[in-house]
Length: 456
Image (cartoon, rainbow, N blue to C red; front, side, top):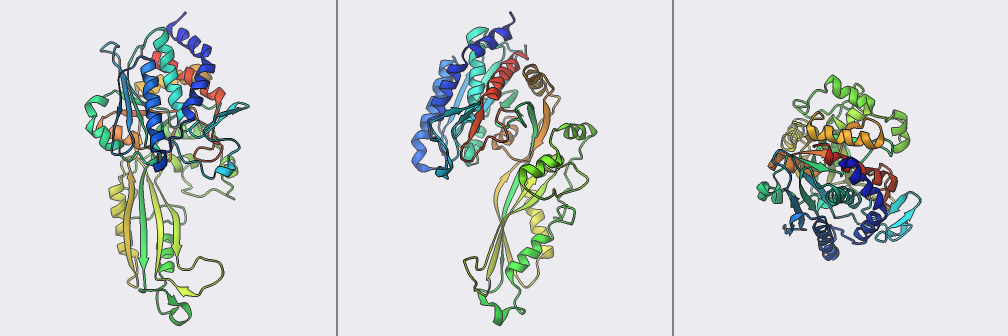
């Protein structure tokens, strides 16, 4: 019997215990954004540390930050030629509101059919447990063939606010060849997925000012430029009719897709009809020369996230508002930076804003983009592992969102992240009735077990 088979048999023989322990983890309401749950967040960190101790990890520490702590552990007993893999995760979860929409207690995990329902089941306590239990199976049978470090944070759901400073201050401790990050998910239960790219983010608040107070629209309309209209006109000019962003220099550093990358995007099993059905829109929109998956994974965007001005209450009130405000986000691709995008937005406003109004642009939040070479040893080891379990070559995709740890580890440690995971698009992540598809989860544990052996 091969070493991998010994570990896989251990996984299959301990499935019920794995599920029971996951339920214990999910029972801790580790909501990082709420002050009243600070003790629960600490308790979840202690729970993760206890798990690391139980599988014979060394140097296990609950390390403080200016916010919630980071759990660290390591096992460095493999040969010097073996790679060192960091395993990333987070133990914090989102709030549960609105509570009345849950069909069961969000912190009392319940199995219904093939699903486990609880807050954090998919995002990402279930993924942390998949990693822990794959490593446990190897430790209990043949021993680890590689070196491992663990980085499990408690602030991912609030933007990993203090993780950058932590990584920067612990670069030597965290040194590794690459990071396994199972926080990305799969495209479907029969569609094993590796995410090779994430977009960055530049988030702004744009305020436009006119008169020093709200005015009577009958007395002053037609002679005072309405700030709401001026804002709408400025926003309308930020795209052309085909969805191209019109900020000066916006595309200067955007990488062209290679033929191979384009073929990978074409292979993704996501049709226009499915996207329309998923979102409820009458038709898709955007740059027509790119596939929808390319528009969301490999092209930068500019989106209006919110608008506010004037009277918005019930009934009517004829005012010419004194100000108007928009929240605007730009999703960025590799080689673009939030700092440059902020300058480009300011340049657009200086050129296009009329003299009849004043404006203010506030930079609220930034995150860098990340990309991983699909031919790297880590990605190929994971692809082989996923194929061994699902029986098919995994899909490679770029995601439109951002994960703070990925960029931070690249920046300060020089470690690329391999993004996967076993959550599904319909897991109700961040919503009531969050759930985990258990057959996919068990397969995920087996795939991660294969992954660690693929470096022998």
